[in-house]
Length: 159
Image 1 (cartoon, helix red, strand yellow):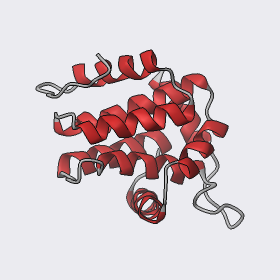
Image 2 (spheres, rainbow, N blue to C red):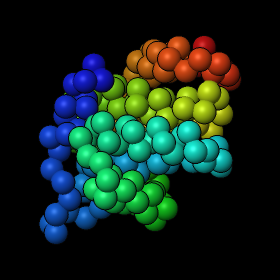
Image 3 (cartoon, rainbow, N blue to C red):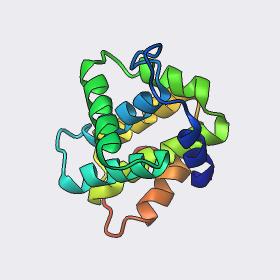
């Protein structure tokens, strides 16, 4: 399933003069991933590296292009007043399976540091609700990400 969303994300159009950052699906995805990384107020190096690895893999980019997308996501998140501007873009551009897979990517970032903070959990929950991912799919994606992060701690009110 992740390969399907990664394939889809690679095919999304890059930003152009006709796209504002809030309309560019790549920047919307980057902004949401950046947002969940910082939800607990602490950005660890391992989270930053996972964030960049997800972007690099999703879009088959590296170097300056990767740095530019990461910076654009950070800038868009810092300028945003809510998550809707980003989630509405992804909801328009991703099918149901793609939206579920995106929530899986968010969980990968959350568990990059091996811990689940309640603010990270809440952020993923809000994004999932806004893009139309069902509760059971969100929980299953969390379980998969937690299983792939040895030593992960934390629980959620979902269980």
